[in-house]
Image 1: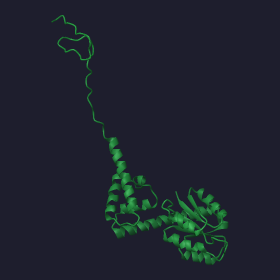
Image 2: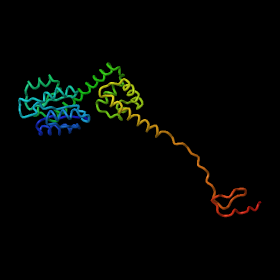
Image 3: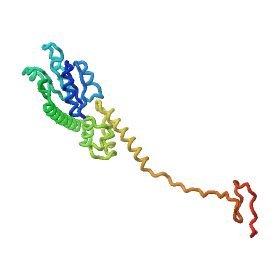
Image 4: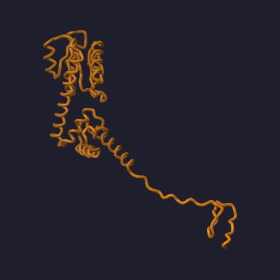
Length: 249
């Protein structure tokens, strides 16, 4: 599910974009200022992939504070769509120079426009993640499988679902993650890798325990409590009646 941040000073603009984006199945966070947007983008739980940023976050049209936010979000790896109510060529050029990926006029905020923008943003995100994984593989000596694991984690695939996402066994995921951890020193990555390792270790242990057959036990024969005993048998300790004499004796 795509996680989107909508940054606009006008609440009405945020509501319109939120409704349209949620109609595409996106998870939407709202911010009415650059400060609020920075807090949301920095939160680990956010995992923002795409941001719609209004250039003008205040009523003062000389204040184009949204452009500063564009630079920061792009530096953090977030795909950015600049939103404006004015068709100003200067804004467009400035936004794209700062790394914006797309541009949307508020009057054109309809379903089809947003669908195209979201699809293009998703495609760009996948390309960038692939480039990051390949660069990591080249710099750190990671194998293609290890690069796939890192890419999947960056996309937000839960650790428990990695083997399904990549179509490999849990034991293979665990082996590759252990090798990555032995390299060590990955900024912000080691903690995630340890969580993956814990998840798969616990699951594999539970699967082994479930598949181990229970030890077979041979039931002991029940002791007879009947007062009618055969010759030569000792009286039962649970039989309080005197033993009867066998006629053969």
